[in-house]
Image (cartoon, rainbow, N blue to C red):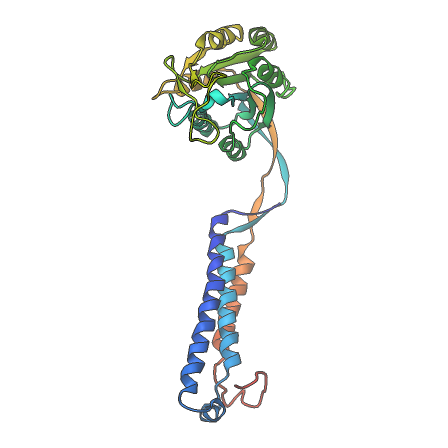
Length: 341
């Protein structure tokens, strides 16, 4: 498997076309200045050894050498062997409510955005655990199967929005059912689900599903996001608010009772989010108490740097640039390798 250890360095390659553009403009200006003294063909007689082609060649050699050095700085590597890496961790499924009420702003900047920030922060504190993501409203869907690729997980979380599930509602039972089927078959690994919701407009048999999950060794933790006072729900356009059938603005309030019942039935705990605290530290401490089991994964373990040959090629080009002269000399004057201007 091939990779660059410092791939961000490769952005410097954009300098090459910019330098070529500058060189082209410089050469045009140079020719224009020469033409002001007279006919170019006559002036070339006064510069019998000058070769514009050699100037272009020397510049091109330097640019290729610079490009090779940039690639070398990016540290190209090749991994030749796969090996099993054993690590201790847990399996965690995060179920995130994406119903319209999650657009309410009683938890700034909104319930959903604050939840996404908390989830991303939680994943950032993980080391050897595996994580998956489910989104739900009136239905539940797997957004990300369980994985140890935290970068991918954060990317998926950043793209979560209330448009992902068209059917409205808060079907926590469906999310728990889907979550139970999303874990691996490794019975030795501790498994947990974190449900983040405002608990409003709850439907289904969530408490019963939480009991079933607990019987299978899956702990259910819940986080109530929102406030008792509630707030209006911005509409999809962002210029108004959601209204009821009579045209009155709808106030969404967080309903903790069902979330508490689900956590109790699932053998976990309920955490209440506030403007300043999403209960992340308390949740993380609870997850740390879960017994960690061995998790195996395949990884390319022997990456070898391949930049040595690239640096050597760049040095050869720089040496060649020194040897290539812009003017002819007595040693190479009889060789007609370049067309004179």
